[in-house]
Image 1: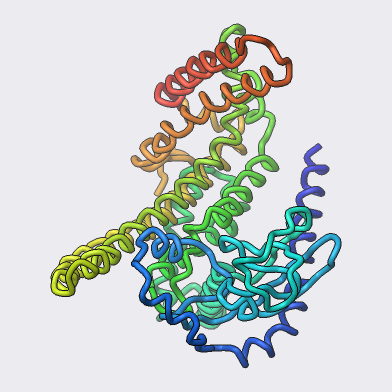
Image 2: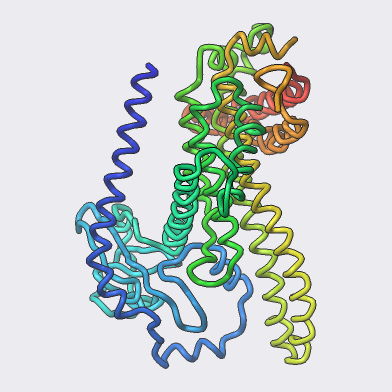
Length: 381
Length: 74
């Protein structure tokens, strides 16, 4: 059974890698187009938007959410590749600048409420008046390189550079005194090993270390880059429920794969519990198996998103008051600045805490999964 | 850091374990209620008795979960 689950997991991950490679190949064609379109300024017909009333909800959600293209300032944004697979139309890839910020259709697709949908309108038609082809949209898979995906690539590149240079340090100097980046990373790795992995998993901690360290540094770096509002940082990666879902799903799968007889025994029939109580407790425990990663997913997503929304709300206050009176707007901006600095400090703390909490709870679930009968006896003493 | 045994939880471990308690209790009640709702829809009974019964069972389950998590262990 275990071998079957393991084989299934391997198949699933190889499919994922396969699709990533396919995405990459498609992306190469798109790159040439993008370079020409980078920093593209938008035509005057959108200038009218400047006179529109300020909408705080739209501004906040626009910054917190994902988007096709990376908005820099005003009407300037960096176009990103749109990669769509439709079971009938096949694979298509083009630059997001063709959508003209959601105002135009291209290649039989258009943006509708920020999502790529299928349409029958010809290329370059006004997207606001084109109708959505519901039938084709259902069979459309959007695997575009969005702002969050690019943000994730950037943090992965940083993570690789940091970790490889640290690893090289050990290669050169051995396990002697650490130097440079090494002296910053080493205490964190030792902390995760001793206070997270060893404390929760026990003697079998070593096989989980690669995942725990990866997930800790990945979440930490994405939390931190999410606080920097300048390109190429500022994508709200860990505040995207899809990202936290994927992370929690990996923790869930690892827990299931490593779950031993003792673990399943406690879930399906808790020892020492009367039979009538088991009728309720067993479904509760089975539900708990799914609930734990779900809570892990919600916790990280909610904490990061909430912090971003608070800071953006402070900024929105400037414009709300500024619309009433310009002087009032300037006055409020002083308070906004002070509160934003305070919130950013708090978010800096939250960035570390949430990365730690995710890693710690993952280790706790792994610990419960691999805990043997003997470990349990030992800990009772 | 561990001197007594191979597994020694730091003092904040219990706190961290309990941070998700509220959400998991809510999840248990919701999970049971949705199961009842789904079954009622499947059986097309005139009175949604299963939704009611399973929602209450969910509350009992959430309480059991609360006692199990806070009353433990090791």
